[in-house]
Image (tube, rainbow, N blue to C red; front, side, top):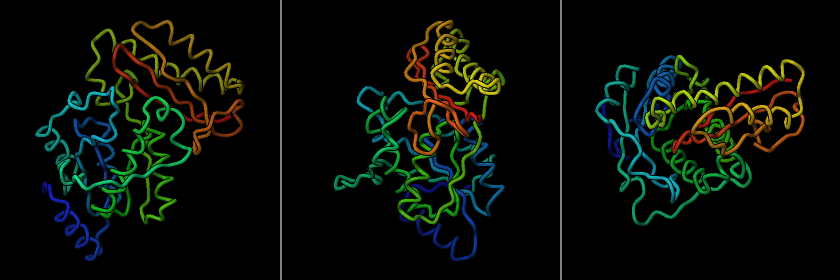
Length: 281
């Protein structure tokens, strides 16, 4: 595995790989890699000749109340994990090169960001969109792989790629979970032992919603009320949102007809966790 910290060098390598007929998979991360990230990398390696991963903690997707400096980091550990997962090149650009003083371009999606996490984290997805667009232009992949745990992010990237006519296939990979069902996340490291138990209310909520829909319940208000009641039985929890919506537009729906997305954001202590599942009526 080769480490690249220069934008121009990464672009040069990517162009040479494409010119030689190699196919490229790309997995962007903010580091502190866990098994979820590594499974995305393994999937990319299975599908293409070359796997490029990036580690870049993107400052412009953090809000005023979010502590960028507190985001967990383990660069040396990340290098070892990425190498073992089959990464050929790991791109680790600096903030200074990604966002020089003259930088002023933004990408704003009109409506898909006005729901779910977009309401709780204003400006977050604008930051995600611009950094992903930049990373795509630098690494020049044929495919890029994202986890479905961040379903709204996945939908936004798909929309951006379609709208901008980018020649990249976006692949969503199923959520990777701990043995107890908790969705893997870098933020899980913030939880103490008691909070980890309460965090299982997210997966329990997904299981409950699936069981209700399979039992014939299609009214979203009934499902959300049942989830709220379940979550309230756990300690250290505060609900940010419980939403059942169209999986493409993120707009709320009242009756499930076909496929719908159940998305949750819950504070466990001070840690905000998200999870989701698709419901089919």
